[in-house]
Length: 292
Image 1 (spheres, helix red, strand yellow):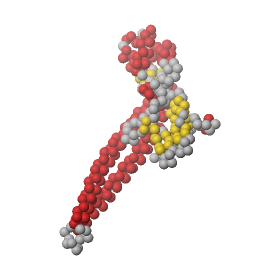
Image 2: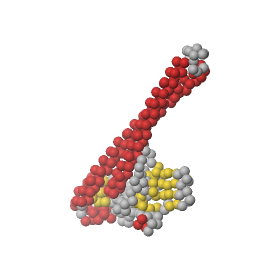
Image 3: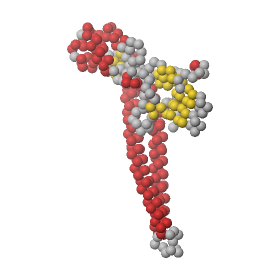
Image 4: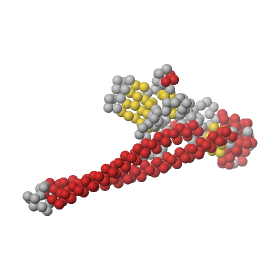
């Protein structure tokens, strides 16, 4: 799969190469998802991509080791976050910068899922090629098997092969057909698993897109309380201020957590009548913090 690196400095999210803006000196920044590392908005460890999975790791890695002794690590968008050349030169320092909020995180995740689906398409093509190879191998083996079988009834002088050689070759061709059938079955199972996972990724992308649109509308209307970034000082300040300033209209608002969007009406219904008393606003704050 062809991977195009995103080096636009206006692109904010996960790995961003800022070397050009740092006087040519290596600078790789990482802005975590809001939900990363158990909703702490902190960088998670790198994890290898499974093309058959229905999701990507939060900090996915495509690791490559080259024949000349070099190696590197890229994310699925092609941004190189680590490299080691054959001469020993290495760059691996990563500067963790503030996380994205949930809305930004969903946008970046969908962009990565586009690349993930491209990777799955490449795997689809590989599996289809394997099936084509199986058909060709089986046809060749059947032809060879029949040739050796037809040779056995012929007399010693008329036969092209002696009996033992013909039997051995027939056994070899039979095993080739059996192995090809097993491989075809395995490839079918892989194909089905890949198809299901691709459908799951598209479903997640659709849900993400719907939530992105809703978050934008809520933000525009002033009904969004965004506390999705947990790596900043006073992470709960927007919630506290909203409860202090406009308690009477709080039910119409939504709280954006690192991993989900929840309505204040749902929160207050869960807590009961006690949550309707302004003096008990700490009850609401504590409940929401427990959801993170």
